[in-house]
Amino acid sequence: ACRARGVKLVRFELTSSYERYGTVDLDSDAEEITLIVRAVAEKFGVEKFTLLGHSTGCQSICHLMRTTKDAGLIDKIERIVLQAGVSDRDWYDHDNGVEVMREAVQLAESMASPTDLMPSDTPGTYGVPTTARRFMSLAGRNGDDDWFSLDIFDGSSSSDAVAMNNKI
Image (cartoon, rainbow, N blue to C red):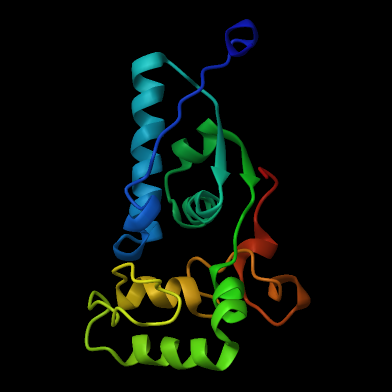
């Protein structure tokens, strides 16, 4: 079906996939996506791309679109598709309780270095090694990963999700 339409499909796995998410941030994801788009464009002569993100991949694509300064890259991305975007913050709050999670975020904020690992029993880490920075991104209000929380569109959040351009 792809060949008949002149479409090429490339599936890739980010370094942050699966249990590796705790020590890799969205800046790294955005850099990897950029490198993949450039490599595919150069090797196969592809001029336009549709990026499809699934689950946490949605946050990775949104972060790329928000942070890249590469106008040539943005021109190559014709559209983005966000499938099953997740709110880690909403899930953690539901699974562990809002107050418990706010205390865990405060612990992350108080750690000496953003690259320090959270204690292994930190609620929301589920035993996955997680840096303080990544934990704040996942569990903190308006963190880098906080694109799909339920309160984003009620006016109480400053998320860029509301301002995402028309490529979605």
